Image 1 (cartoon, rainbow, N blue to C red):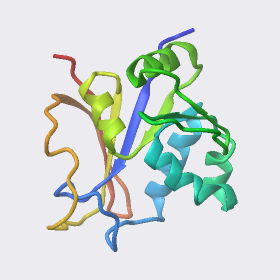
Image 2 (cartoon, rainbow, N blue to C red):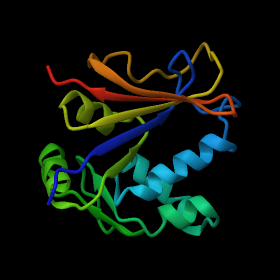
Image 3 (cartoon, rainbow, N blue to C red):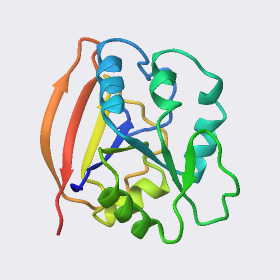
Amino acid sequence: MTHEQLINSTAMTLDAVIDVSDWFVAEDDHDGASRTLLASCSSMLLGRKTYEGLAGYWPSASGPWAEIINPMPKYVASRSELGTLEWNARPIEGDAFEGVRRLKAERDGDIFMSGCGELARELIQAGLVDELLFWIPPRIQGAGNRPYEAATVPVRLLEAKSFDSGVTRLRYQPIST
């Protein structure tokens, strides 16, 4: 098997605020590009909090996003006991870093991880994320949660793509130091 990529995707304002409010653009041409990206991946990687939040909504949802997300295999990392997982999910046993290394080595297809929670930030810092995608609407938010403030990771710009919606997607590759 080949080495598959772990792709982390995050929506944030120009000033790096992730708290979704009226700035979030949920539809238009970038939405299709985002769905196409997710559909090209073989599985999702989630932290426990993200899993619980998404599993509380998506299993009963319908539409084009649900048709991709619901059947996709999901792997969940947590420091606490997960118990029985539903929604086509399996726990990552043991150390999350080692579990992600195994997933990348054993899975066919890229692995998608949404958001920038604790798991994502730690995997980026550990050099386990291969690509970072930032979906930036034309908005400066001001106050809000900026989860990357404490991280120092050199990156290389791979692509900047603007959409008619005003959203810009920035693709970066973390550089190992």
